[in-house]
Image 1: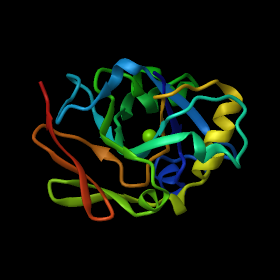
Image 2: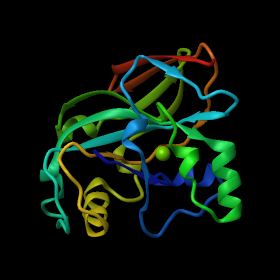
Image 3: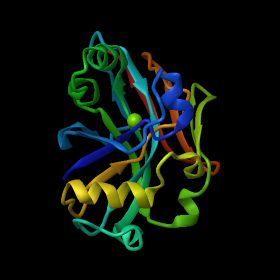
Image 4: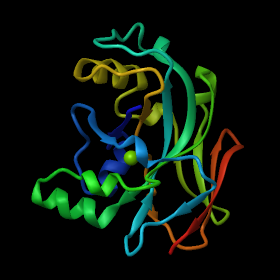
Length: 201
Ligand code: MG
């Protein structure tokens, strides 16, 4: 199982990190072992971990060099997820012009909140992250720099993806650090899709 991710896919988020809005999708990966469906998020010791709520597509059918017309046919399920990120490490590596591998991959770095059968009208709803009862991030597919069809079609020109692979489609603005005791809710169109408690060793 592969976990593919897209960086800087919302203009306001790219700007909050001091980046230009990209001219082509920025893909990266997390290891499959970083996936977590646990209700407790355990932060790695001594790190500053940021939340990034994202719409996540689950592929029901693999493929390679998929056209834009058939891209959506490869999605079987969707969910909300958190692309947890060691921001200081990412900034450090970015300044050096090096890959951000260990800023994005550690145990529990890819959190997902259940999976639901794919329904285009569901993913068109606003989604948001509530931290301790306060909304901190809100997104909508309409605000993506590259839409889902484009993300899948272009990804499939780089790799062959398989059934069960995940695609994290990027985070809207409002990212910030998680702390011990934080209570998170991942919400789509007013429905709570997942609740998580953050703990720090
Ligand atoms: Mg992200």
